[in-house]
Each structure stands twice: as C-alpha cells, then as structure tokens.
Length: 132
Image (cartoon, rainbow, N blue to C red; front, side, top):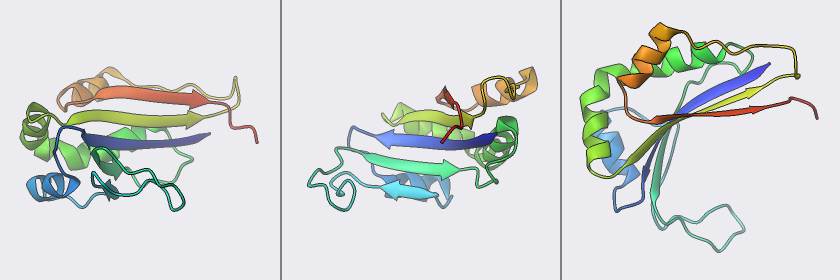
C-alpha cells in the first residue's frame, strides 16, 4: 500500500502563493507562482499560483493518518482558509492510494469526514494499482 495526501490552494485569479504563506503563517511543502516556468525544459509558464502542504508521513501508512496530520496543522487556520477561498483561491485535498486490487480498503470514518468538512476544499481520491 502506498498513500499520500496534499492540501492544495490554487490562485487562478491573481492570488499568489506568497500571500497564502503570509496569511496562514505555514511553510508550504511546495509553492509556485503565476509566471513560473513549468518544468525545466518546457517553455510553458504557470497561469496561476499553487500552494501545497503535504502530510510528510511515510507512504506506507493509512490514508486517514495523512489526512489527520494535515488537519492538525490546518484546523487552527480554518478562518483564514475560508477567507482565501472567498478571495477566489480554489482548495482541494489531493489523496493518493496505490494498492493491489484486493489488498486494502481505505477507511475514512465519520469523525474524519466531519473534520474535513470544517476546512474548504473538495476531496480528490486518486486510487490505482501499485504494479510497476
């Protein structure tokens, strides 16, 4: 089983990743600004900013543990996060789970789902096999 979770804020309407960092007082795992080059070789540039906070847990644990870790950091900033989405930032929880077809079930219990609902953002689940 391979799992991970990242909370993402995209500023497609003029918001910057630096402004998110200042308002939240949290250091992101990664941040990108509008106008930054996409990749090293591409001539493309980003149209909007992107602020990412990853759980930073080892990838072998439960998806719920990754989400709890992020929530522990983000819940104290809930009002600021709602303010950012009110300013046009788009929030989501990007989650990855890779497993053999019948190996593992992902459990997101009601208390965890309640915590997620208190913070803006849709829950995106990228579920796949972990075959090479």
